[in-house]
Image (cartoon, rainbow over all chains, first blue to last red; front, top):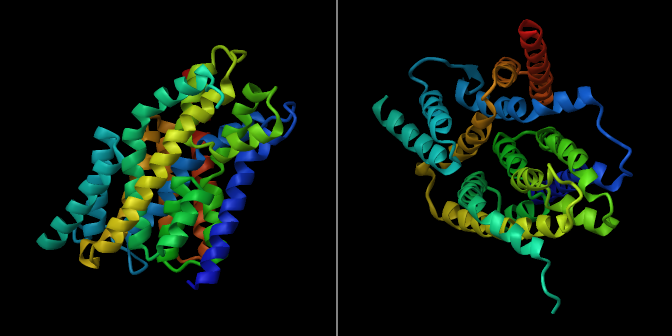
Length: 107
Length: 232
């Protein structure tokens, strides 16, 4: 990605994110999110974040690979287990990286 | 120099335990951005101007994959949709505040201070000093975040590629996702979104990502409704 494109991406995300945060805060108080939309928004982080990392674990060069020879998938499972048990970002990331190197070396 | 409002100091104190979580997350984000090849200046610009970790990690991941610019911006927008919810739910507490104060809150509106703010004022929304409390919460968190992102960038640029640090971005995203998965509807949303993203990966313009978001949200809401109906 060229430097100009990267800057355009950064500034666009910054503007969009600020708008998302300011949206209701700058409006008069009577504007509220409809209940159905509120309910839908609750599921956004879990759904979208998973949609971003899942292909990183399960695809190898764009092809589905759920075999035990896929060290990224195995490292991801370790990371999920650590995150489930300890709920720590740093520990999860380090455990996942160590597992990745370990499985890479073993396989 | 005017004395700080007592609620400002209270906010600062409340923020301190959070730094144990914010610092390492900033470090991991900095390392992931460096490993993803984002230059230090641009990475710090992201950190200061966007100031929302999940979308920065998502953008980093997509930049590494070579996704088109428009797709990256859309993905960050979708990841940050929750901020609409935060904005709407915090608005009644800042009813009497002038616009510039509400814009300051807007800039610093991230997950942790939002949650703490509602914990403190959720039961007594008319208490004074709410803005000061929010600023008191946000200043240490902001400083800690920027400092640790910078440290992560330094570390990430020093370490050679054999460390496979580019895998830090998906791992940190996993660490952010898992705490949500404490109810069945949430697990249904995540699992179906993940499966859709994997199966629809070949679609042009990463439409699979938007499709996965829609499928995941629908699955979560359907599960919630189904469980609710069964319970009643």
